[in-house]
Length: 377
Picture 1 (cartoon, rainbow, N blue to C red):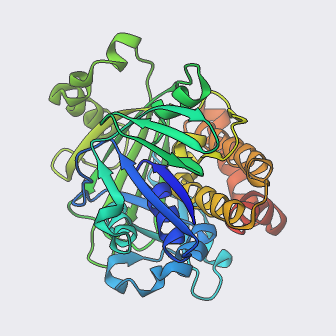
Picture 2: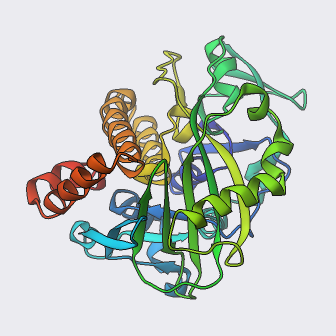
């Protein structure tokens, strides 16, 4: 029986654990540095068909229908006049029971946790070192040493484990943007709406069938290193209210009394794809590569990467990084392009963007190339 250490209990780590639960040839343990997983957060995530297809293999389709939403379109709206420019029919990429889905992140975490025995998760523990012997000898922060056949690192964009294993500092870079997220108290609609403005955009979509809506705005903002490391800065109510006021003043939406569960945080992305040639050690999810958020593929790629690692371990193959390089480059390019297009402020460029969007969203070849290649594994 092969033993696997999973470092981090996020989406990618828990999905891998679910896959390992289906195969008696593997034993695993999850090591999570937090003391608890927050299961009451109401922030949303989007899951395209590429990840829903994988989740359905472990029973995701059996979730109660009221806990998820199935948007059919993505609407593009100009913030300046609040007029819809065009839309994309994302339902065209659906496959039978595999449908583009939006939901609370906590709903997905609860689903993934449900099939993982409590005894498999070790909290308040971090990896401190790895020695390559006959097996991988892992030293943890609780002074425990254990031997494993494989290590799968899934502890997020700020993965300290990655730096320890690589023997060098691998830190993400600030994307010169901050995210403001929360839940709208009053709203209506069943699809995803992207509101594009100068130096910012925001997205609204339903997260279940109970008239709950996710709001997230990405705002261009360059911050000093001192502010980035000052956790209290992003908890400052004056900063929060300033961002809310700025969006409200430049858009046809009043957020001041309509947004709850508000949080502000800086956006960090990977500097480059680091391929670490350490036998039987894999990086997945944001620990492998973290994208700008404007293509909504973070959660889906986390699930994909864990599925690919499982196949490599199960089949004894070595295809993981070759496949991932291609997908990461494709998603990263689209994420950066979307961010640029959503934040245009020059009136001429904005006009040309809107004209281009009307054409491209009705162009079959473009949609299959830009979205189909990502949404269909």
